[in-house]
Amino acid sequence: MFASRVPPAAVGWVRDQATPGRYSRPLNLRHKRPEVIPSSESGKAEGMPETISPSSAEWFAHSQRALTGNLLTLEPLSWKHASELLAIASDDRIWYFLTSCAMTEDALSNYISDALSDRDAGTAIPFVVRWRQSGKLVGSTRLKYYSSQHQKAMIGSWFVPSVWGKGANPESKLLLLSLAFETLECIRIEFNTDGRNHRSRAALKALGAFEEGTLRSWGATRRGDRRDNVVFSILRQEWPETKQRLLSRLNGSRYCEASATDEDHV
Image (cartoon, rainbow, N blue to C red; front, side, top):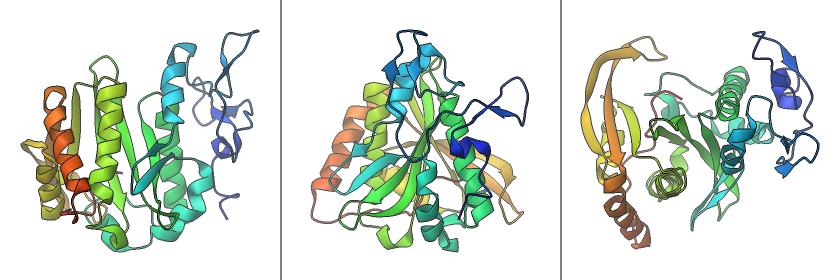
């Protein structure tokens, strides 16, 4: 379905950083997870995009690992997920408060391309979310705007309405926050939401995130109106308490999830 629309990177080519819009060197990455195997000739890892330097091999390895919980598996995003994502992204309720939308084939192609480009640049780790019981995709989540210098990142997610209130949000946050604080050694994780998205704000407060303030008239939504951006965060020293809160919620008999999405600029 996407063969005529996806950029060259989808079939194993990478962006030429010196010439915008140009792609080069096939990497044979389509439909399989690249193996990170040191090459005796070049010292680089085979299958690693040209945009990732040898010093970023550990980052690339992290971006290719699935994260598994009791309810969900977070699979590294790839072009092989395009058709499954398109099939679940048609509900306008998912995107109502977001500044962009991936409901159409073209929009989803851009969504995936941008996410993978950020991954290859070492600033994001995007995942699709698979519900283990059914084996079906139920959304997407990512660690983004990562800075190793400042030891910080942002988390954003969206889920289909059928899993709202069923534990998808807290478990995906548990998995991503564990990656951020315990593996990548982040000091700060940020969340943004539309000021009018009361369900998302309630979910972030239930998570234990601290509401830092509101950036008034921060930007335009996809409908063209202005939005206030509410900023939340969790710091490293707050993570043990937040983690215990999440585990307690997930180990309970009921899930008290308040929101479908914590991401407002996909």
